[in-house]
Image 1 (tube, rainbow, N blue to C red):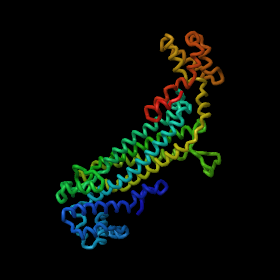
Image 2: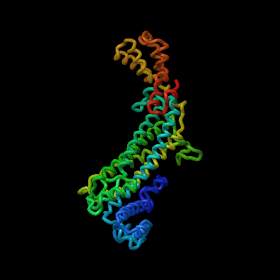
Image 3: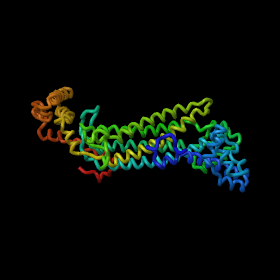
Image 4: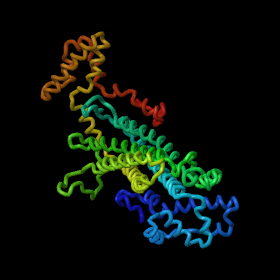
Length: 444
């Protein structure tokens, strides 16, 4: 009964433990004991009985055996637990409904899972930020629509990733806050048999907030938001993975996943080093989006409460948390151990023969007094000729030989125009904005 839904391949020990059957039942027991403590504080549970309840346990095999008879897991849980406390059992589950226990117990599991995810995300943020600073002057080609556009740096690309992950950190913090809510308000949320102050006391003792207005359940907009945030983080990790996969293509070859001694990339072709970790991230992100959809489907229930959500959540919550936990761990290793080929990046950047500086040439012509459209057409014409005749003069040479250009732009200015670092002189400002560099640390 240990985490039956997701295969072991993607389950890391800490998160797997949070979603094990043992953990789920222990959380239910935490809730029942907390309620009994609150009743004891009000004189309803004698202290000698409370001592027995504090030592209560639930044998999972016995619970499973009872469930075969009752077809109700909470009743099976209560009976199996009651067998361990003798006549003190009469005080367990006083005034409660199943969802008081199940939803509040699930909130405890989600809180633990959310804390683990937050730790993983923070580690990835630190790794990405460190790599961004390390490569802030690793020159590479910036692409748009898959085509060479203008020079950039690998560090700047990573800085974009870093800031995106920090936004997810804020969203996850809010999602963890929203999901960490329970209810002890009875069958339809009216506190008919359990007072609101007792509910407040119980949930405070468990470290949870109170669902301030409830039906029989904690409302599922909380759960939908939580999984939407997890899916959003997964989408960003997929975004990283797609870029890494592109950079590892044979025709690009600017970076690749670490390939350790003894690794084998293909069962058929010994030369292969495939981006299998990035592909795994891309695939798992699809699962997260599916889980988020399932959580949204659970928001609308008959009369605001049926149990159609229950079967879905038994799968999607453990799986979503386990999947994202693994993805964050894998992404951290991938980015931390990424193998970069700066020389190849330079080679790719220079392969266009200067086409990537076309905007700078056009703007210099405009600054010289030339009509913008005329400047655009002149530069475009030279660019088209250069790109369609790879064996001919490169764009940079054609521009220097163009009479109109030479009359308006000096050789010294053209040298500056075709210098990538002149174009990138403001890159460090991005790192300063992100707090990754101070002004004093920026270097020319």
